[in-house]
Amino acid sequence: MADKQKAGQKTVAQNKKARHDYFVDETYEAGVALCGTEIKSIRRGAVNLKDSYCSFRGGEMYAVGVHISPYEQGNRFNHEPLREKKLLMHRRELRRLQGLVQQKGLTLIPLSLYFSGSYVKMEIGLCRGKKLYDKRDSEAARQAGRDMERHLKGQRTED
Image 1 (tube, rainbow, N blue to C red):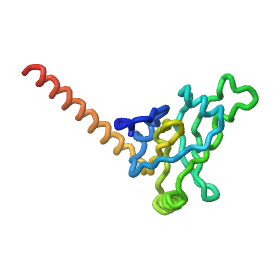
Image 2 (cartoon, rainbow, N blue to C red):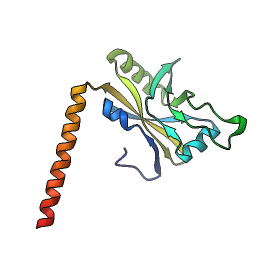
Image 3 (cartoon, rainbow, N blue to C red):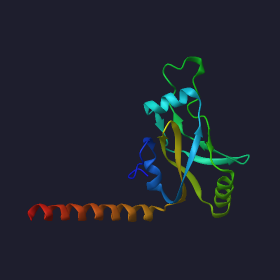
Image 4 (cartoon, helix red, strand yellow):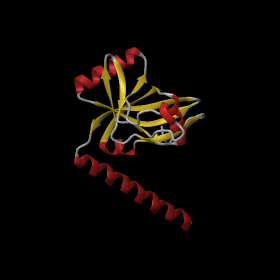
């Protein structure tokens, strides 16, 4: 979604480490239940998705470890920075995801946080962990692609 950003969507934060550490099998969009000072902090871009994940409790999904910095003008009504955020999805999607996570040992990782109109949405990835050799392979493939692009660009300028 980062490359093909739709009209009316403004990406606030991305979890680049997630794509490095995990294979992303599927992505989902979920709404996020937030309080007022959290929205104001997100508009400022004071969000960190690193080391965050999603967990299920009581048939609902929560984002754990998402750090939203306190709003500077927020006085006593400020929010807790690492508060668990409730994610809003259709019940059948939640049940399906919960079943996949329990049976296959997959993990739900927040990939990005963005505004869709006036709503805050989170892109969640259904992920499998990468081994060290998988990380090396993906890095080598990315480097080979860069070298090929650089070589082709050099040939185009000579023509």
